[in-house]
Length: 175
Length: 398
Image (cartoon, rainbow over all chains, first blue to last red; front, side):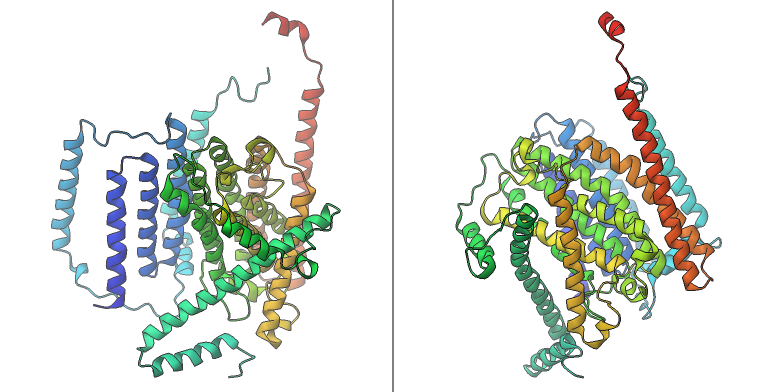
């Protein structure tokens, strides 16, 4: 077993273990912190795959923004910040069924996939993945249209959020 | 290879020879040497951090017309060691109802978020931890971990002042991250790389001359990110006692404190790397790597001194004013500057360098002037509204 495989196994175990803790811990803040551990482990997996841009973006977006907002939401909506919420609601069987079906489906799908047995080609030295990604996202032969559509979607979400939160009566009208 | 021309490389080769001589496989020896390098860098930084305490206390005392520490050792130089001994032998208190694990992890994360920044700092030509081609994003990612440490400290302390302080600090940090990240993109446009090493190497002319406004906005965002005055409402001693670290005692508090000082120094370093040429100073860096390190430390100290100057001169801003300042002024200005810079860069790409530089400089100055005019007319309108006589009769009806 190579060092890379050992590292991957350790990181994968950490990812799965902390993901399990997210859904089993009874304290909501602890769940959010375990989620951060999970997301960080995923960033490490990206780094192991030489996708440094994705690794750093994973940390910036998921840990720096989304997970922090999760913690904020929990802290602002709960009366007691250390309350113990029930782990299951009455739809638990549907969730479990969906999870088993998804896992089974993915397993069946990946059985017939040739990519699992293929070895990865070495990245040539001097290959700048970030520059490559940037060119692809802005060139007309590349992915400029999906990229712009995603930007428009995000702007629309932003404007929508402002519109929902904006109260015209107490907004900019002085009393 | 001469030792004085590349001391780290020579030391690494020497160690590699010794380790492989002991029968260690080469890959293991390389990893071990890597770890030793990290240990060396962190040790140097922590020792520097001890003296930063002395520097900070000495500078603040001069700003406040005092003498500062001068009793222990020459010029009070031994004072920080006395401080450390005091912190170490203090009683370690964990408040009742605190979340012990999170409470103890938070100071470590706080220190870590500063130390990992140094992985991408080019301290001399070809002397940097990792030449990450996404160095600019990496800085923001490390800041995310700092934010996390503060919210963990505030929540786990089981203290409402700590909680409010953490809320404020995190609100400030995630808001000022936006202009900061935008300003990191401006040297990226000039250097055509996000790597800190490449940005330093590309600065034949310091970027502060190309983008003075960007340098200023970056400094403001960095000070807010540090949570220093005038953006220190997280600590707000008159209202929150000390904010998120109120319950911490002994060396755990020391970790937050030392982390903050080193963070300020580090951001002084990044400011100099991004806008003042980093270790470059008229070819001095090519003479000897040690001289390059000295240049970088000098520039970083200058940046740190400016941050201290601002901290001990200005008063605290109210939290809503600060967030309004960020979202309604600084962020739009940063976006406008980014667009103008990208446009000018495309427009002047094939022109001689004097035209490129003066075009960039002028566009910065004009944008700054427009922004100030907009801010001035807005504040005039606000002032008129306040000065307007209040309709007393109408108010009586309610």
